[in-house]
Image 1 (cartoon, one colour):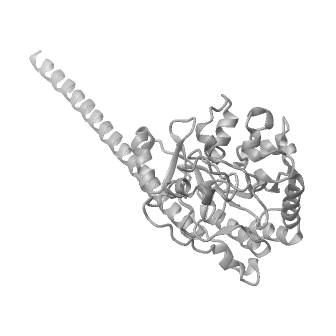
Image 2 (cartoon, rainbow, N blue to C red):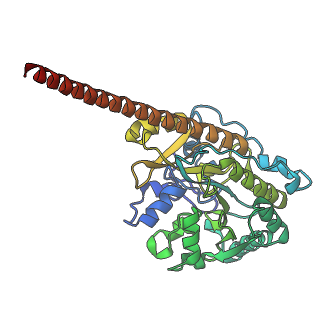
Image 3 (tube, one colour):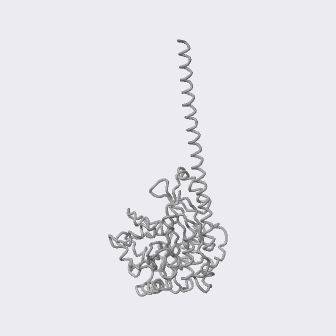
Length: 396
């Protein structure tokens, strides 16, 4: 019924489902790029696919966001960042909120929060000609390099001497070797990227002019990166502090300050039911993803049970190269506000960490019982030796 339809920008159904059906080259960079940015194997090459292929896209979108496929999709609530942006000053708004879900630094190794938006009046980067790519890059970098934005960065990092940030073109990031690429990778702020020569479908993935008109703004302390024109017009990533990686409260507060400021300055593409539109169906709605790298020495021993535990709590569980360590992130950001999304994620992960801690305590108790029994046996055998020695001496 839908396979012969085409959007007004000439995209067909294959352009939507190619990440799921294409045989990818045996290149970890390409596989990672496709899997991380298009989980579920589906992409939106333009905004119109959500309507043109709605019979296919809407049930899939509901499924990706843990919403009942048979239910009617409600109106998406307005953004918390819009509500905040009516305040006279971003810096006079709510104070930073602290919430560390792993205060003893036992399990969480690192974390990031990502938020994406697209500017009203422009198509997605995949379809843009050079002039429009340059326009978006100029609009965003002008705001990011202004003194007012530097003051927000300074306010968010009062203890740091570094007060602003720098902008790097994507050519600089993709250079081999690239210092900025290495710095972003070590901070957990490097998104999955593949160069033109790594995939034969680069135009389908990135458009005709890749990597021109794209880049990344990086704060001096390397805790914030704002990617421009990579799939969406901009993608903000903020990492949790290295000294307290479970501190997701402060990290979300920082995102709130920055997004509130940007919502005051810019208009974003919006759909009544799908919220903020994105090239990545998993980022519809609030357009926000929380991601933590967590060590689960106990729970990870049964990976199927672990996936079930996560799914029941609305979390996506992805194994890493290490069997004990996994990446957990939220499924749903559609039909919820950014703050609800944050609260749901914090509750779900805290619950998992409690289970992991209980399991380790049970194991400790089990080991302690085992050791006690061993010592008991040793003591009783020593007693037997003493008794037998006494019996021997009495015989003599």
